[in-house]
Image 1 (cartoon, helix red, strand yellow):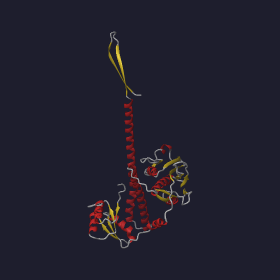
Image 2 (image 1 turned 60 degrees about the vertical axis):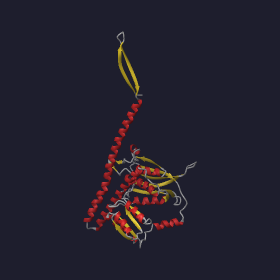
Image 3 (image 1 turned 180 degrees about the horizontal axis):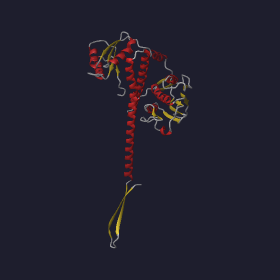
Image 4 (image 1 turned 90 degrees about the horizontal axis):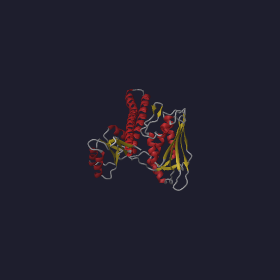
Length: 389
C-alpha cells in the first residue's frame, strides 16, 4: 500500500545523541482517488478527441453528397441533352438518398442515447425480407457484380418463416450489415440467411440465428472490440469507409429486439455477423385482415374530398400536391397556422388537414389546438421534419 512518512529530529539527550521520530500515515485511499481522477481525465480527453474526429467525419460525410446535389442541380439547368439531364437527376437522387441515410443514422443515435427507440412487434415474412434485400443490393452501384455474388439461404417454408418481430428495425439491422459487406468485399460471396436453433428446458424458446457472411477484408483483432462504438470507423488502409454509425445502431436495435449479436472475422478471409433473436410465431391472420391489407396498399381515390394543406415552404406544397394529384382530391393551400384557423372559421367544409408544425405567425401546434376547439371531429395529420421530439 501507499504510506506517507514524516521524519524529524526531536532533541539531544544527556549523552549528546539526537533523538529522531518517524510517523507513517496510510494514504492508500487518497492515492486511489488520485488514480481514478487521472484515469477519468484521460478518458474525458480521449472522448473529446474521438468526438471531434467523429464530428469532422460527419461534416465530410454530409458535405460530399450535398456537393453532388448542388453541383449537378446547377448543371442540369444548363445542359440541353435530355439523356445527360436524366443522368444528372439520377446522381442527385442517389446523393439525396445517401444524405438521408446519414441523417436517419444521426437521428437514431440521438434516440438511442435518449432511450427513445420504439419497437413495434408485428407478423412478418422473413423469407420475403431477405429476398427484398438481396434484390436491392444485387443492383447496388458499389457492388462488382462480376466479382461478388449475393446469395440467400432460407431453410424454412414461408409459413414457418412468418415470425413476430419489428420488421422495420430488423430490415434496418440487416441493411446495415449487408451495406458493410458490400463496402468491404471486392470479390467472392456475400451470404444472407438464417437457421433455426432449437432449445429445450425450462423458459428456453427456439432462437433464430440470422447472419450476414462475406469474403471481404475481415476485421483486424485490434479493431474487433471497437466496431460497435458509435465514434469508431473501420479503416481500409488509410481510407475510412462510411460514417461509423451503422454497427452502433445495429448493436442497440438487436438488444431492443430481445437478442444479441456475435462477430467472427479473419483478416483477408471475411467476416460473419450473427444476430440471435427469439423465434416467435402466431396464428395466421384472418382473411378480412389480409383483405384490408390489400386495400390499404391501393392508391386512394378521394374525388369530392377537400384537403387543407398548411405549409409555408412552396416547394413542399408543390411536392405534396404532386403526390396527391392522382387521388383527385381538392386542395386548398395556406402558408401559416393563423390562415389555417381562419379557413376553418370561414365555414369551408374540409375532410382533412395536413398541418406543418413549424410555420411563421402561428405554428402548427397552436393552430391545431384552435381548430380542434372549433371542429373536434376534423382530422389533422402533422407534417414535420422533427423526428425526435
